[in-house]
Length: 289
Image 1: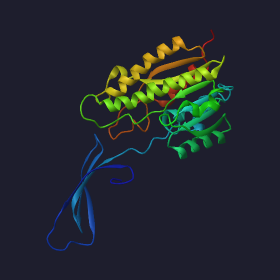
Image 2: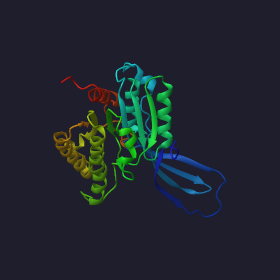
Image 3: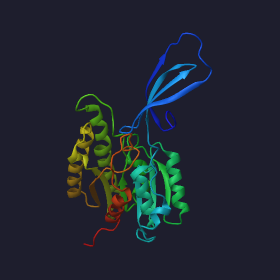
């Protein structure tokens, strides 16, 4: 179990011994701390010492198309052409599945998770609902021009691209980390909205941007992340007053189950499906008038 596939190494001690040891190696769990899933393991025999390691949860799996089918009518989002940026795992993956389950044509992007993205696209196509293709798009390394062929067709865009949000740092504020988050959530998102505005002509395109309850709750060590999400909310207010063809929907999501929130410390989270389905409905089916 630990050390093993789903473990995080903490420390290792090796003691010298006088005289020959045995060929065998006996391992014993001396202590286990369930609060942080920490194993304290000692070993003796051919060598003597100890290992400390955390048991890490396995990577999180989002609901399958079969699980989602009972929650969405097959024609709910028929006619929608939806671009989900950052959909190789996590909330982007689930959003793409919800859209396709309702009959939407979906395009999902990935920066590095090609195998995951292709797996999701294949699962959607095999479900008999909607359609899906996966394509590479690096939010930081490429401009929105790389998506020019699809931007003129989309009716909705979901922006789930994100860097790693939990970082070990010294001090309250790290300017370099703030700049990295700002490039993702402000600079690149702003450029995407302008590209959509230019490509939309007289069509209306709705864009979803996920903010976070961390803006108000302010958990320790998350200053840069919360600050950039708050700044993005200000930007979105101004863009919605300026852009003619693009309307941006922004909500503060609760803590949800993703690979980024998957931790050795168990934290209560909301249901991903319960959180995202009403959101997708609001973006795809805005009230008349």
